[in-house]
Length: 253
Image (tube, rainbow, N blue to C red; front, side, top):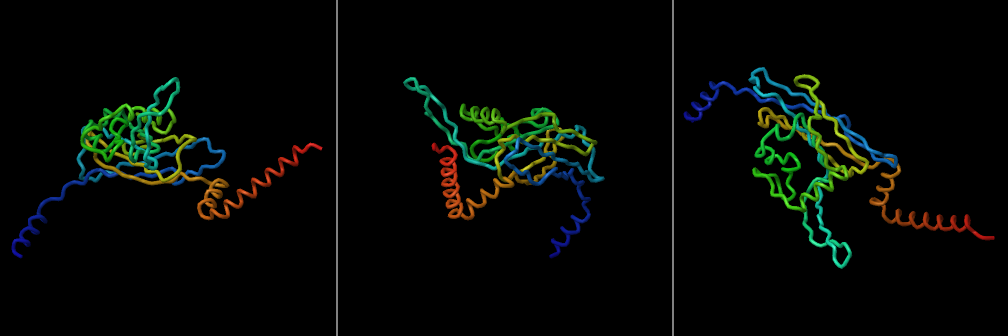
């Protein structure tokens, strides 16, 4: 008991350490609705850097990295080979739990924001994003299948890296616009904001938002999943009516 009291008294006399910077972020929207006329959209991540009065000034400027990650899915990368004059799929590799959408926005080139060990631990950047397992302290080993996967996802507009697109509106306030293409997958997305200075990760925050179908398309989807028997019956009725209507329209007298 005496030792415990002495330890508590000693800790009480030790001055409290200054708190590090914290991030406060917000999204321009919490839900993106996809309807039949959807041609793409966008979301803006706003944020501010809050500092305690006891926090010492940083010698290096603040750097921001924003990632917008879509639902994780298991994908397969296949290599086509020509056999007897026909192109067919041969070798394949499984990519376990990779993002179906990934947009990265930064205030500076990624290599200048942080070194490889720091980025590898967070999985920041296409060169550090793990395609098998979780992020590690070492950069992931890439294969030709990984390279093909990243190339195809960028060609589809589902993977993007926009360096120097994060804008500081004041020394603490910043904004990061991210475009959403027309073929963006539906589901829940996570916006993660990282605060760096001198290559050191100071703070991190995450927020979720959804991209879902809306209007008539969502009503049909809900009917198919919630009442499959009724959906099947309605489909048969519509098909029969369409066939009858076509027969009437093109009947030869």
